[in-house]
Length: 289
Length: 289
DNA sequence: CTTTAATAATGAATTATATTCATACATAAA
DNA sequence: TTTATGTATGAATATAATTCATTATTAAAG
Image 1 (cartoon, each protein chain N blue to C red):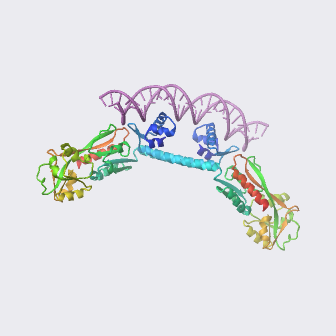
Image 2 (image 1 turned 90 degrees about the vertical axis):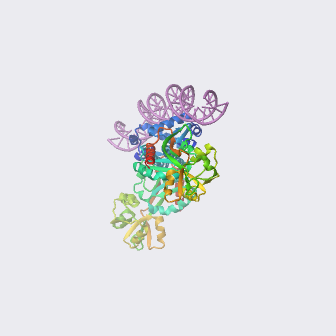
Image 3 (image 1 turned 45 degrees about the vertical axis):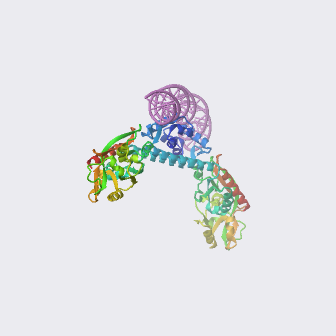
């Protein structure tokens, strides 16, 4: 209203843009002037001439009006999926495997959506989901929570990696008890988050001689090559090293140690459509690769 | 409301700051979400978790809220006279005379008030007053308008300036008819705005041989010195030249040509108090100097 | 100088909007 | 399973905004 009156210098003209009666405008103006304790317009004969105070409010009003327009536009883009954020968390060692391919396909379809991977939330992702800090978690561990739904994505096999000449080399498979006298490498604690422990060693009540945390796969391979360490790793993660390094793989347990990956997200009905698309691309990629 | 809910993540807590019932907040939230067509908060169990859309609105809301606080503060300062603008218009040849002294006194009392002199509006100052572009006009011409009041400030005398040896040199005074065969210098047209013409020549229906516009007093003095031009000037404006230049002054008409200066401003009751102070300082300065 | 037309201001009536109240519903905690 | 706490909802109420009808003011027209 202030903007219109300032522009037109005149109540009756200002009214045309605003679709209200001159009376409404007059009342409003009077009220805001009383509330602020200053006159926004001087009444010079039949004209409304803006005062210094009026200019302050006008400048402010214009800023606010444009800010609202900008926000509204941003909101529309967001709603229509033209722009957006997709925040995912997963173990970073796995995501390097699939991320580039998925990103390529995804960003071609949703160029305005910004995908962020948060590798550090994996240990206990549920709070992050509940606080809205991530939209999804790619995890192999299912923790019950009635606000979260899990969607099965794909399965992979974990195999033991040992140096050539290691006692395990010619075994058809190893069992929990075989780990009792070994130095075992893992990415990080807690042990419950490591599939080998959760699915094999803890149920069998076996504790390895030593457990060492090493974050980099390359470094783990180097330590395995010394013959003093063993590592249980996803099959696809060892593959690149098998041809060039003196290491071999041995299945874990008779039927192999398999791991199922899930995509966890909030049970809500307003999830962005592109999240679903992202999941589909990811699932397809994992099955084909 | 959005800000409070986002901060607290919780309706019932947000309510405390806002002094409304949870119900009111819930209704408002629902309404704005319907209006915008997006959810601003996800309802995760008993928590309200902000969405991307919510974050857009929140950012916008925060900008607007701080903008309003800034504007309100500025307005208060303006109302209390801590800051402000004072826009004056007058003939620039006169203002150099009094402006420095008045400014010194004034700005000591009102350090936050910014004084602006607009020399170019003098010719027809009334529209500028009516449009609020200036707060006051220092003028010697009174133009009737029922929205404007004039306040008498001071009087000065205009004298004719001629070269030593000019035919007028020994006259006790000159009259309108004496100008008929002279080249007269003025600052600028229209002639009606020149006191000599308005008060003497036009009433007597006398037209000088030639009228020449020269904006600088120094240049006018140089031309007067040639003996071929006469100039009618405020006594105080010639004074600095009298001792060093071969020129003399002659009164105009038997009783002298006197000019009254007025300070014109809008008839309104919310004029800033410092304007009154400015006028008083100016009036005192002119009487004493 | 008077009349007319246009504009703003005002109070009461009306309409629209916001809030509360009384509940219902959902869920985490006990 | 019960209880406590938080959100949602519809109806009732309270508040705020707008219009309507009228008055006052003044520039423009006669």
